[in-house]
Figure 1 (cartoon, rainbow, N blue to C red):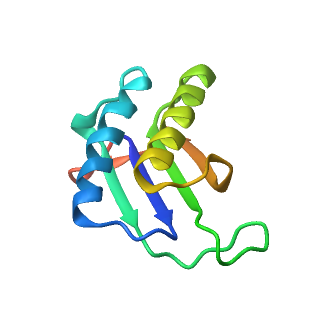
Figure 2 (figure 1 turned 90 degrees about the vertical axis):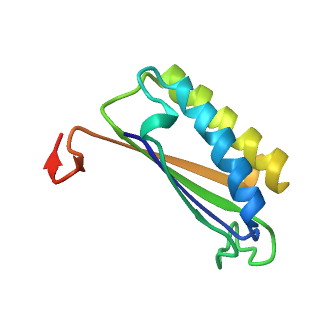
Length: 114
């Protein structure tokens, strides 16, 4: 039950959201036991953001929430892939992207906690 929340200064068209959805859906499988089947995504394009005191440059903040834990090597592989996707699809420089991971053993779905 992964969730990826992406906020970026770049505008994201409907077509680009579809491409990002497909690519992030494939990327989540870098984490053992995670798949696109349970992946929820949120995109916020055109966000007001500043990075390193710069309000003009394009940047992104990505939050990845996971039910359970993932190995550090798997998280590193996912970080590399997410930054690659954002660089390729949105022309975001890798050094202007933060990725934060939240791992939890508490997750609600369908009216129950898992």
